Length: 138
Image (cartoon, rainbow, N blue to C red):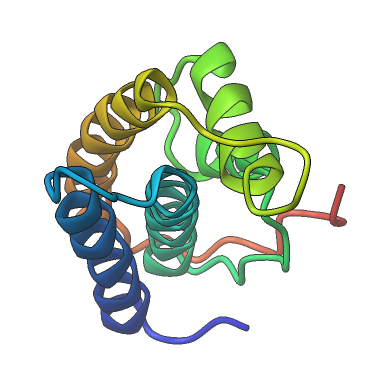
């Protein structure tokens, strides 16, 4: 699943655009889709950071796991574990029957996504070190 950094960023930016467009849509916006695409944006940018640093990202949607991998290659990386945990849950739980995102959920998700997106894009330019595979999927 390595891919090229540019491909990961392009896919992430596509998810960010969809989340933004739906968030600002107004009436009949799909709140569940906002949460899903915001999560996907952050997941793909974390994987882009790993690829930029020579690490093949694992197949996972768990942002906490990916965060631990990013911290191994970028020692200065700081994140909020509660935000990552919540974004992981929001990106997955609202995709299935039984739970529905609210406007407050969408607002929180977009704030987290926007902040992380900016920070992760900065890290991508720093990636040039070759590192081994991060570890097993959790």
